[in-house]
Structures are given as structure tokens and as C-alpha cells.
Image (cartoon, rainbow, N blue to C red):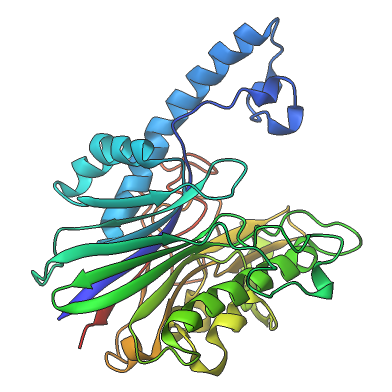
Amino acid sequence: MTFRIATFNAENLLSRFDFSGYRNELRQDRVAQLYEFASEADYRHAEIARALSLTDDTRQLTALAIAEADADILCLQEVENLDTLHRFEYGYLFKMIGDGYRHKVLVEGNDGRGINLALMARDETRDGAPIEILNVTSHAHETYESLGLYTHELKGMQQPGDKVFKRDCLEVDLKVGTRRLTVYVVHFKSMGSPRDGLDGRSASMPVRIAEARAVRRIVARRFGPDGGGKRYVIAGDCNDYVEKLKITGDRRNGYDFVHVAEPGGAVEVLTADGFAENVVMRLPERERWTLFHTRGPQERHLCQLDYLLASPALVRTGRSRMPDIVRAGQPWRTPMPPGQEVDRYPRTGWDRPKASDHCPVAMTFDLV
């Protein structure tokens, strides 16, 4: 018996309008900055028209990427609420896959923008095994103090009583056929911009490392420090990488992709000592990326931010299985190494619309 699981940062799957750009130019969409608005009312009308027009194309592409991932269990990041998820499924995803994800879980977490974690599951796997959600636990309330994770690296950034998870660690117990499975959906703190003489990744690293330690502690608290032979998957956007493909060159003369190791991040906390396997590492170096990062021609790389970290019990068998990374929803501006070019979905733009800035990652596991 097998099951297929995927993770996808759907990038701002929201059902609300953001009008804060009228008073804060940093929050204003770039197309709005081309115009002058006589009043806030005029700005609101224009923003509604812009958002509606772009969102329809974007969510068709999002749905196509999810359909291509073809997972029995889907872990999502950046979803506003259950109502938004229902509307997206009915208006878009249903048209791609038909009667699909009947079970939906979302718990509002700590994010100030209201982007939350969600899990959707089919009634049964492709093999015909029934899927049942048994229990849902949010860990959004956990603090550095409650988990004993406050360190000197966090001083000046966080207080002992602050919440560890900037969103949540959503723990979902499932029954697939006769087997138990636990999924931990995560979305760690973003890297942000350079500050205090450090690049964004380095400056925010202590917070992500604490989140990773918190996840590991939560799993170990339940299953033991070595996983206890239990089946679990830590799935989501860790906003960190262990390697990257640095990009040089241009469209006219061609691109070059250089592999660079980036040890010491949050992901290694979860893979150390065989606690979990990053299954994407089974792929060749140039095929492991899930996001294109750029701050202009001087800073461009491809990297893996999206993870399926599987317990030793899940990877005992199926060693020849490979993960799938869905890239057809990436915008045309994303340079891809030779041999990885894909046919983008119809109406994909140079920068937008796109399915997301992230790629879905999917994997089929044995349940034995």
C-alpha cells in the first residue's frame, strides 16, 4: 500500500483586499505606483479591479500545479482561512481534478498577515485505501520558554515569552488504510532583507533554527528522540536551504549554474542523526531547487525551500522512489538549468501571473 503526499506554498491564497498601500507605498502594488489617485476611494476601486483580474489567472495556475502534483495528502502554506480554501477548491481546483479533497484542516496561527497552514486529504488513496483524519493539534502557543529553547543568539531579536513559531507547527494524525501517519506542516520565518551588516538569511537564522529545534522536540516528545519507529513527515516551507545553484550570465549569452554548499542552517537540525530524510536529496544536485531567488543580476540563485522530511520508518522501503518537483507554474523569468525546461501552463507571465513563487514537491511512500 502506498500514499502520495505533497507540500506547496500557494503564495498568498487570500480572499481579502489589502488597501494599506494607499498610505504605505511599501505595501503598494507596483502597477499602482504608475498612477496618481485623487482619493482613497479611487485607490480602493483600482486595487479591487487589479486584484480580481490578476487573481483569476493566478489561481487557475495554482490549481494546475496542485493537480499535477496529484497528491492524496496536500500540505499548504499561506492560506487565509478555511472559507478561502473551500472557495478555491470549488471555483478552481474542482475544475482540474473533480471530486478531490474532501477533508480540510486549517488552524489560525501567529502570522501577522493572516497566512496560515492547511492540510487537505482525499477520501482515499489512488490505491483505494481510505484516508481518515484522526486528530489535529496546533503548536502556535508554544514559546521559547515553554520548550526550553531560548539562547543567547536570540537576544535582541526575541524574548523568552515570545512564540517560537512565526506561523505554527500543525500536527495532523491520519489513518491511511490500517496504518497510522502523522504529518507536521510548517512554515518557518522568512529570511527578510539584509540588516546589521548581515545578509537576510544570516540575520534571521537563529529564529529558524529555534523553530526547527522546536519541531524536533515536539516530535521527540511524542515518539522518542529517534522517532520510535513511527511514520511521520515534516512538510512545508522551511525558508532555508542547505545548498544553492548560483546563477551567472544572461539570456543572450546563456546562464551558468554553480553548486554552492550552505551548511549550518535550520534544515540540518531536522535531518541530523537520521532523524528525518530530505527526500529531495535523492535527486541530482541541479534538480533539487524549488524557488528562484533574485535581487537583481548580482544576486540570483535557485534553491530548495520546500521540504518533505520523512521519518526512518517511512524510508525503510522504496529507496528507489524519487520525488517530483512541479515547475510548470514558474514564471518565465525563472532560468532553468539545461534539460529542465518545461512547458509552462497557459497564460503564465514573465513575472506574473504564476502558480506561486514556490514549486510543489510530491513523493509517494510505502505504508508497510
